[in-house]
Length: 88
Image 1 (tube, rainbow, N blue to C red):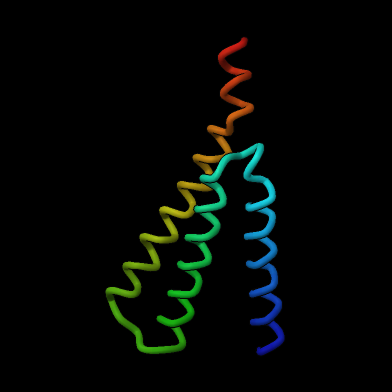
Image 2 (spheres, rainbow, N blue to C red):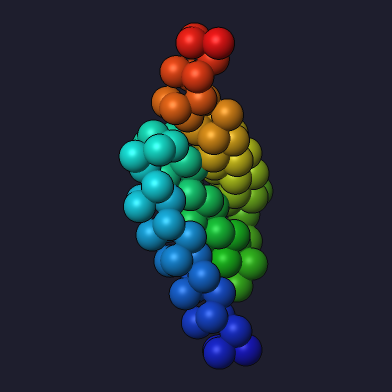
């Protein structure tokens, strides 16, 4: 189990790095979304393996939903797409 946790943490770290490196074509929204996804996953782990709470579960859902919104919003409204739509 420990190996899987480290592997998953590495994948999340890679996800964050890719989002940071792609901030030029996509803007900052996806990066903040991935960051919130990391927060959501951390809260989920604490809620699952630590003291469980209704408030923690609500925080997981809210941060996850906001993270997904920011990632999709950033991709659909990327700066290069906006300039293409105004030209054509």
